[in-house]
Image (cartoon, rainbow, N blue to C red):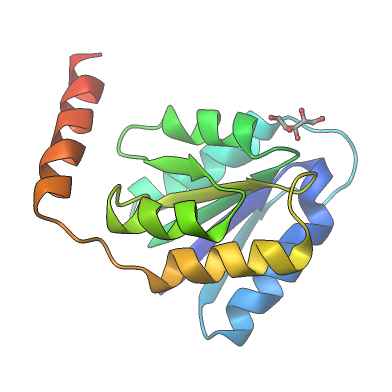
Length: 147
Ligand code: RB5
């Protein structure tokens, strides 16, 4: 499974830790930037991650900014993306099981490295449960289609 990962300047170090963790777990990782700690704009990096996922060039995405908020909003503007901001593992797990989230976001200024790894692991290890949850996701897709 391939994971696209992107971040703004606030999350360069955390992205390095998470990328290494993913590789250790056997995932293929594509880093889309930024690789610089110079101030940059989170929408650019969120969009890159999101477009990789909708194009099928990555199975899932991870996007990190200072809070996870701005980059998740940017990701969610790409049709077909269900990005979530999670600061703890429970929501991360449920966001896969119930919401079939395809991009995970968190904040480098919010979570520490060990908690971030735990959030990522719970998210990746969980499986979408389908059933009534699929119907609700279809409702979300309808909202997206209606514009
Ligand atoms: C950058 O200072 C900060 O605004 C950004 O990383 C993020 O937290 C936005 O939501």
